[in-house]
Image 1 (tube, rainbow, N blue to C red):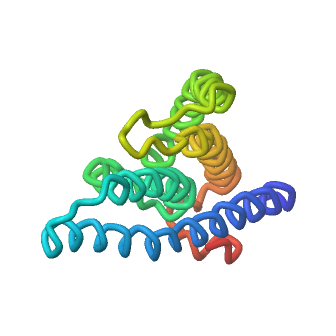
Image 2: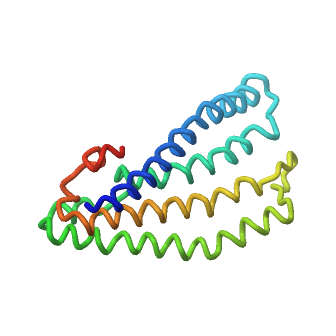
Length: 178
């Protein structure tokens, strides 16, 4: 792999790994909130109006920000049956075709997500529930996650194009980026 591609690949992957690890810490917030919600409802017969909604609002960024690094780790649903039943050349061709589809998906969704998040921010959008928290901060994570996912797909695509043996490698094999 060319040095410039390796540097870009390592940088994007490192950013997504850091964000993934930071986002994974949100589980330490979500789980106690959900435990509180269950306990208040079933143990104390006093359901909260905010706990489940807050857990849901925190889970959104967690889910969105984990996706780009999960792409690097090949943790997304894929066509393993197809990849295992075809030869390495066809498998590489499918990978070369797959990443531009992911990038196009991200670009199309970004086209709609940016105005969606911008409008939510401008209006100070809230959930309109009885608790009524602001939800515009959560909506700002949508274009951010799409941008990060598109960047990760782009560097993964460059890796596959520039390195014919890339499909035989695990994420830990390419430059210690995992």
